[in-house]
Image (cartoon, rainbow, N blue to C red; front, side, top):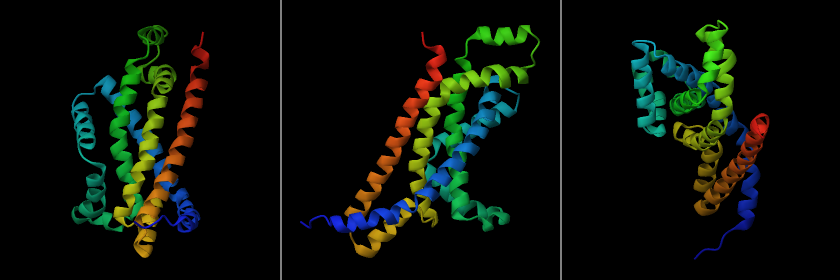
Length: 224
């Protein structure tokens, strides 16, 4: 049995850490776009516009029912064969697109549930002062739903960060891609993948602590 090479592992840390910004960029961009799209999808699921509602249900069903890896391959390898203008898309863009569409489907259902969780008296009060449905959503319902959905959305962001590890299958050298290359060059796969696992773990733990603080902050106004 070969002993762990701790000096190799320590030397690998700064190499992999240098790719954290790219990983966070992909996850952050995906989160912003997914949140915007998910909010629109959730509102539509609440108001139920005819015809459009069926398309939204189909969208959510497809992206929740298929693996993220399959979706990434579809965007990067498949669609360019059908839509020629997509041949110029790079791996980072394809990864962000995949993360956006995949997680927006999950986030839409969470936001929809959060909207449904807003007390009906809030809806009635907004209607009683003559607010339109758009004004009511923007000023009253969505801010309150955001507080309800925030912890779940942070969990999706954490999952999105872990999901960026699939971007290396598109030729993107992010954290996981860099670990794969280092392991292939040194044949020390266990050490390389152990280091990358610990780095992901640290990032997730930092975000989890931030999530706890966020929950405390958001619930201050409702504490008795």
